[in-house]
Image (cartoon, rainbow, N blue to C red; front, side, top):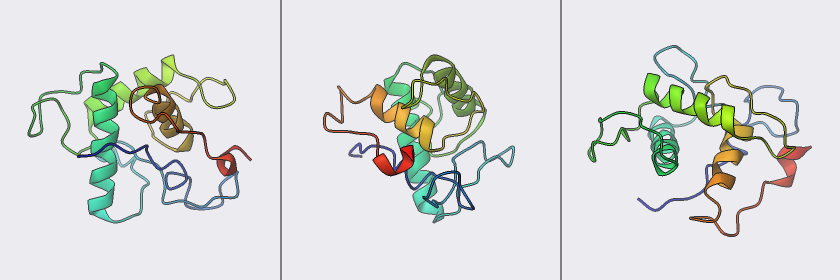
Length: 133
């Protein structure tokens, strides 16, 4: 699986967001009904797998499920949520403000993850200007 940055604009709120972009919603724990993403189910699992690969690459332990036994299975459960919360506690958004530690992956957390891996995977990555408005 080739790694691409998480699609920040796609993960924007899907109804009346504070910025001008209407996306497909945030990724969240699907067992606690926190998943707001309304896109195609296959696409959702692809995004969760990408998120999980990013977390594993950053050193987070998200379990032993999935084909590689590293927790990357495309299912946003408790271990993935805990890793997201820990990431949010340690990283800041594009305005250097603390990320909300809510365990949800919307545009700010997705962008912070992309920037955390910029030097390793995405040398040309820049925060989309539209989401900063």
